[in-house]
Length: 482
Image 1 (tube, rainbow, N blue to C red):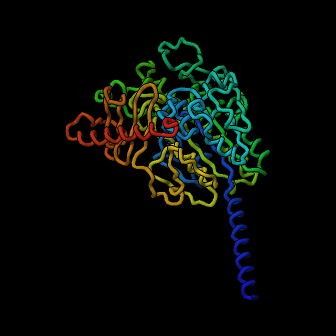
Image 2: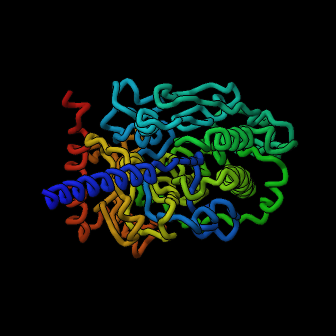
Image 3: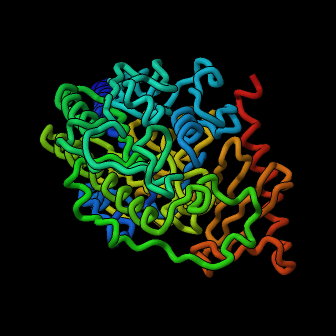
């Protein structure tokens, strides 16, 4: 009898200890999430990604303690579809969001990434641009854009003067005689602005983010911090321009006949030619872009400092990325939309408490953030999500979960499949407007399109087959079935 009692007591103790350990583990897993996203940022402008000109010490220090991904790709090469995709958990062609609208109508009552955390007991807030928001128009107005109210406990906009900021400005685009005044809209404009950081949207965003970190440091939070620079107009306080005098900027190599083997649909919507930007203006655009990146980097530093001062470094997952990349004159292309590497690839840094810093060359998509961060925080990962959990890559940067990354450019009807060796692009789902194929090992700058050469026909055929299968997979989802 005494032996049986001892056994029962022992089993009860084991059960109690197991429950206690599970509870403690669950509490330990309830990490905060600080999601920082820049707008229109190419990885080539970050010193931690190899830039020798633009200096980004604050993003660099995050990279020094996190995992820096060198092959991360957006799912839409302009703002609207990219942001709707990673926030909803679906590819753009699954929701039909190929432009600048919220994914809410398409996903119904399904949880967005931020909403999933909110419904799991997190304080969820956004500061400025997480879903699509017009720049400069929405920033000037301080409006919500295509935001999703259900995603957030609270949301804050950061109104700023944008191109109207006092200072020295110039319109670079379609202004060959120099007579056009500084103008608004999605136009290449530089403004060396008077006043300090807090005059501008990103300065206000950093200040509000710091305030929220301090205010909510005693509870789990999901904080989305959206900086709008370096999106045009290139407006930054004057000191950020000083290290980047335009006449010292070096433009990418220009090859004669570079466009000759590119389908017409593959020529970007903004080029040196149609923007009428001479060499001086091109250099000034690069200098203005770098100044905007440096200004944004300084604001990132303020937010990282606030996290450290609140004692939350060991309790917070920090993510830094951009909604897509950006051309700075490569192939005489400018801005986004293109499916070439500079536009489709994004910087991605993930810092997780307790995990070692590393550089990961395996393929990843922004769509992977929702399932990965949910898993790391101990939340369930909805089966419906079209991204993949890449958390194993944070422990082993050689681990791989994708054979290729997939991206698109919306109403331009272009698609990208990017594997370890090849970049394959086709225009229209039937490829009727052309194909591009680049050997990324031999031709990383994508100068020679191999798609029309007979010796590469088998590779093109394989990619066309992969594309058809991928589109079927993208569209075969619970949205379509319900």
